Length: 326
Image (cartoon, rainbow, N blue to C red):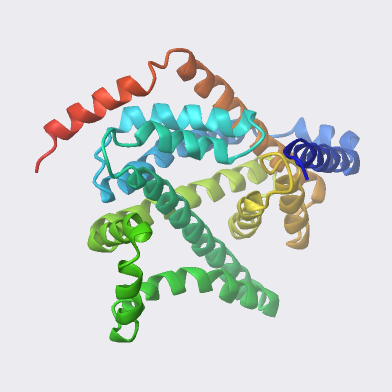
């Protein structure tokens, strides 16, 4: 199947799902309810979302790069990140932004795989932190309702982070040393082995990355809860945590344009199962999409216009390396 056909199918899925969601909302009632929305809470939620998207995301990425021996400065990374977000939201594939991030932070000499590994580590740690926050939300719902479904969901979401936490200890077991030695002799795996050693060798860096990743998702859930609170539905942090986990996870499925429609639909369906009004959930999901688009369009677009390109990044990176302590 050609790429054009696949893109056309993804576009149809996105447009179809968005159209369905818009059609199912009782807009007459929704407009009446929206008139009473607390605009200050909406503004605060948007502010937290934009701060998270730019500042916290760049901070996470900076830590991941430093784990890999690439001491980039925060302003340069936030600039690159904004352009990457612009590409993510206005190109057919969400992977475009990550490729751009790798391209802009790739060392001029050797060890180029470090930039790739830094983005992958950032993504993996972000996903594990998302599951931790989702498990916390599910646990809160279980303790409040004693519904076994939430207990099961807590275990399911907590399993990947727990497995990741145990993996370093398994990695050091003598039972697996012969296997790792054999893999270490495969020349093509040299970059993977080297980057793995960098990651396991910087426990403090990994711990900082995990903490900032948790902060990212806690702030994201807080912004969603504030949007619900703005519509006079307070006390929904736990529900927002579970819904956000679904919202962010389904974005990994390559069945739509940048998760458009699929994310909003899954968010609304999950929220409805948790007792939240379907119309409220759809409006909040669309608001999240709108805030993301505006952030990437205005922020990323403006930065892109004044961007000096990769050569300026390399000069800045070289200067940073010179000034960094050895």
